[in-house]
Picture 1 (cartoon, rainbow, N blue to C red):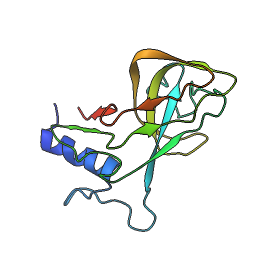
Picture 2: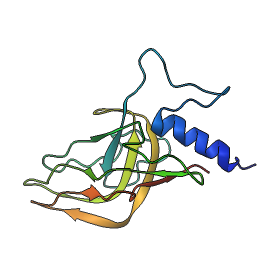
Picture 3: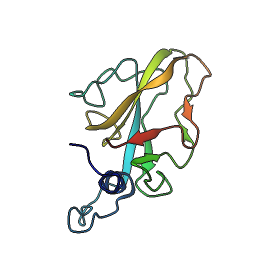
Length: 144
């Protein structure tokens, strides 16, 4: 059975805005995660994958941190949230890649838990001088 929109909003607010869900869940009070990390992939990381699964390795690539507040992610509405600021990755150097997916995870590098992942609207061939980025609101995350 599906969740209510209110429950979906509360789950997203907990994950993306570090907002407690009254009487259900609270953000870790001793050492909460302050950021989520965007990663780019050359194929689907899959439901069982980690952030390193099919992660790109173009020259200068690094995951980017997005703060877990409404400065980083919009307040959930209608069971969805989105990036509240421009999300820019490092500019590609000598070696490129073709990007097909983006993921939101828990680690700045190495193996990390993929929380959400999805295909890009169209693949992006990254070559020398190209800087992948997502405009404000382009990373739409829904809780179903």
